[in-house]
Length: 145
Image (cartoon, rainbow, N blue to C red; front, side):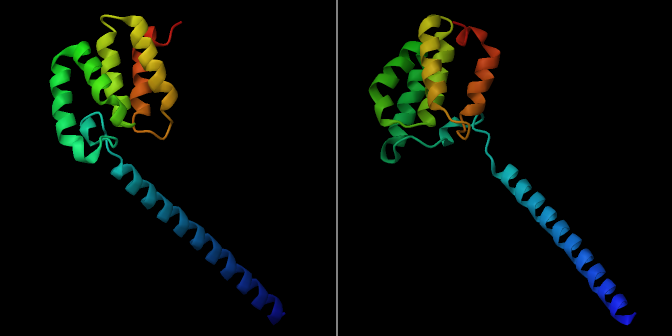
């Protein structure tokens, strides 16, 4: 009889220990998820922080980009032709989406072409993916044939 009671006590202790261990794992996963969510940056507030601008040229490229944005769609088109090959995604995709938005007022077929190029290059893990989906939802003319 004492062996049976000892076995039951051991099983209860193991059962409680297992539940305490699982609870600890859940709590640590929640803390990890909170840290991950807090470190995500909203690039829509400051797209200049997106990676992709060549390091040694970032300052002059950014100044030229600001000047091009003042000149509208034609200014961005010229900037993309001049500096675009040296800039990489996701920064390049963001700039092209700015260009696409400006083009919607002037040349819808060209805006669709640019948007489609950016959309095909952008993966779900990209910081630009959220903006692509927002533009797609807000501007149906970009996705209609």
